[in-house]
Image 1 (cartoon, one colour):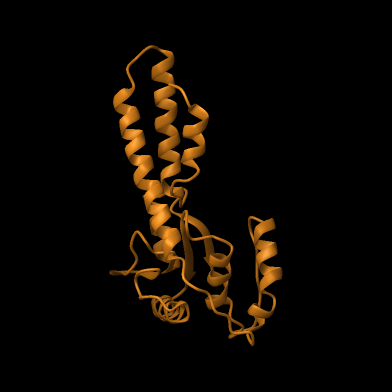
Image 2 (cartoon, rainbow, N blue to C red; image 1 turned 90 degrees about the vertical axis):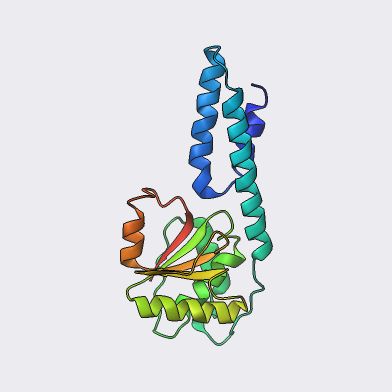
Length: 193
């Protein structure tokens, strides 16, 4: 199987939630090749899955909304500093007064950094009503259709889909998601609010 490096680098262009299974399939094909077993069917499956994942990521990139900022919010005033800190650190703790713009502006800062394309920006809230209202506010600020680029997932209701860039949810929903997505691979960034 030629082009292992090309296949490995192509996986980096896939959705975050697909990368683990694609790498596992690639290892299986390499092992089959080394032992002289046929791997053509696996290669076809790999190429199909990779193409679908890359296409979805490309579609999500084209959805990236135009960002506008309310310069009066304290979080917006320190936007560059926050973005730089997020780029340098895996875990960032941001403290600010109620109404400073943490819940609505942090997801926008993350979008500006290119997050939300390869995986969803997960944003937890302690209450269902807060998740719904912040999702509505973000949709309004991003001038996008509610439930498309910005969605929410609460008990008995899910407005998010495959093109959702930002998903608001309760803490309990995120905890429940670990039952089927142990490493939360579908997310590229998580905000615990």
